[in-house]
Amino acid sequence: MFAATRSVSAAAKLAQAARLASARFNSTLVLVDPSTGALPAGTLNAVSAATQLGHPITFVVPAASQAAAQPLIDNLQPLAPAKILVAANDALAAHPTTPELIAPLVADAAKAAGATHVVGTTSAFAKDVLPRVAALLDVQAVSDVTGVVDKDTFTRPIYAGNAIATVKSKDAIKVLTVRPTAFAPAAPGSPAGAPVEVVAGATAPGAASEFVKEELVKSDRPTLDAAKVVIAGGRALKSADNFKILYDLADKLGGTVGASRAAVDAGYADNSLQIGQTGKVVAPQLYIGCGISGAIQHLAGMKDSKVIVAINKDAEAPIFQVADYGLEADLFEAVPEMTNKL
Ligand SMILES: Cc1cc2nc3c(=O)[nH]c(=O)nc-3n(C[C@H](O)[C@H](O)[C@H](O)COP(=O)(O)OP(=O)(O)OC[C@H]3O[C@@H](n4cnc5c(N)ncnc54)[C@H](O)[C@@H]3O)c2cc1C
Image (tube, helix red, strand yellow):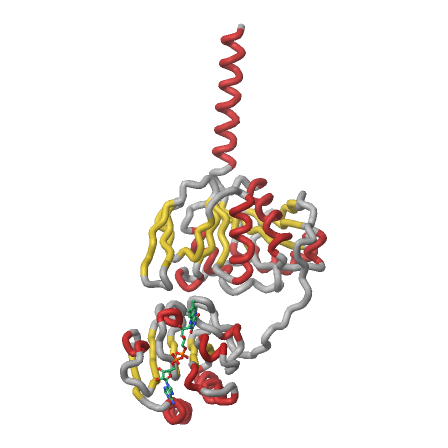
């Protein structure tokens, strides 16, 4: 009798383990930034990376309610997800994108979905949320993934992009941010009717932080991460007004303007335009660096550009080592001349 009971309970345990294993079989969660109803830049690239993991994709959208998330849900349907989870909490109506609120919701959604992978694009939003999610799940986050070797193994740049580390995660749930410029954007098809499920947040909102206000830089130009042409200016520009010559060139080429940290620190350009290790990573078709020396921390943000052009009056400037085309010239003469010739 005793032996029989034991064997039943062993069988029950086996069945439970099998259920858990199969619950974990099919599940990659892709975190979506809910701050606009539009598909945020980088989500399509994160979908490509997530597709390489070989599982159907479930989107997780943090929102106050399903109704609040509906515009975004409509935009996600053409990507043919298996499911769309709304990680809902009323508090997000007043405090959108607050990571302390969102991380527990996403961690709960990952548990509810039996996720093996939670993926976000390397953006300020996901960099804020996903390490918190990893800590709540008691796993190690892997940041800024540039390649998927297999479902446990990833490549990521270290030392400002001067070495590529291949890391293997032994965690049950892999929490990843992926570098958008390393993955082609997924192509949306016709809208599919994936089921939408609401996972209400069990976690009570803490008062640790609150959303006060945001100040967005308004621009008609393409965003830095989406632009095919980037004209970047450095300390040599000497003033914010002088950046106008870069904007004139960018307008002719249908591109946008970026900056080095020295230019940002000096107040010549807004912080959102900074390219580099502590700014944005861009990989446009054409990058033109004007009066930028090419410090290692700047190169970390642009050296994967398809064609790099450098304009600098110092022939020894390190940027010439990564430039496909270099022009040793005074930018205040060369840039307007280029603009006129286009
Ligand atoms: C932890 C850390 C993180 C950092 N993160 C970043 C980052 O994300 N992004 C970043 O950019 N930097 C970053 N930096 C700073 C970086 O080290 C450099 O200081 C910075 O990139 C230099 O900017 P710059 O090239 O504009 O200026 P400079 O190095 O001063 O170079 C100016 C260049 O302009 C040239 N020049 C001057 N006048 C003219 C002219 N009239 N015509 C043509 N050329 C001219 C000069 O020959 C020179 O090469 C970081 C530094 C640290 C320590």
